[in-house]
Length: 455
Image (tube, rainbow, N blue to C red; front, top):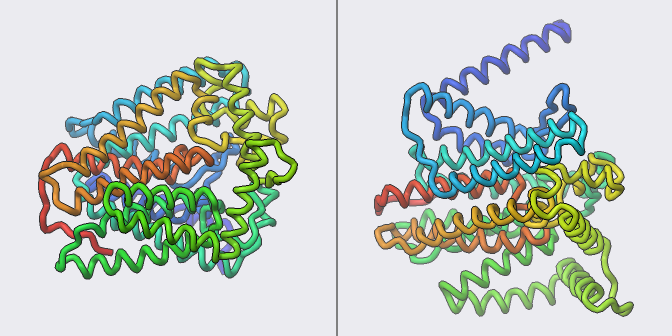
């Protein structure tokens, strides 16, 4: 029988061989890295890696993004190929520069280990921005992006169904810093709010693809509908109010801009959903009471625990910004700042790493300067999708994709007001790849009339 050290050695050799083989493949065809990254997105929290020396646990997706980005840069330098940054890439560089200055300016307030951990996350953000540049420069079809996005959402949904049956009670993970959810679909992300927001985004994109479908496209669209129903069921089982709101906003905007019948149907379905589904009714009633309790300070209404913690998070972020208005307290140092100032019991608690709002997180960590650049970056992304939705030389499928990404991003903007979704790696990958592929399509101005989206 093989000894443990021998088996470990064999596994290490196999891992090194696999990495080398994959590197050779990606060196020849860098565009193939994008499907691989979405596979790691599906694996989510199940694929975490501990960085020796720092004691830092990161997603395998993060390390893959940095590896792919570094390999791509080496190839571009070696072959002296031209790189098109695009407007989103240029703005991302400016934001990264401000984030780096904020981290450097506040570095004296943290230990060496804390500074190194924050620096890693800054480098990671740069890696995701580099994925946009790869998607912008490498041949990668828009239809392929939609296929991968749909498959990722469907896979997360199916895994979530299994998780809800096998592990419905997540309280045992509270010792690891995770919220103790019970009876909610978490899948591999371990968080119903983030997962629900992602599923809602994908549903909005898929819904917009159905407009103007031809007879030739009926079979592909049938698979889109089936996938959408699976994703919708998973979204419902997250019982996430922010996800429900995200989907409703996306449907409402799609109805206003594209279909009065869809608008009427959204309102009717929203009423039926809120009145006829007990668990959803419970969550909506809790939101209603929490809103009035916060707005009126009335004792007749109860502020639930989730809403209370969210409001405390917002108040802390605004307090931190008030003390550090220009550059904030340093990019991704919020959990350390809270811990050192008595706002969090431990820096290891996941909720301490950011405010329950993407823009408040940016505001408190990079100040007004960082927030302005981040807002411009997001606006540029929306502008890119808007141009695609109204590009006359595009096929119907390409315009529909532009509409879907535009309205999905607007709905995601609402979602990010309640959770720190826009800085989550899964959303960074999704939006940066979508923006890169769309920018490439706009720059090429090529109509691919025969291009179909199939699953």
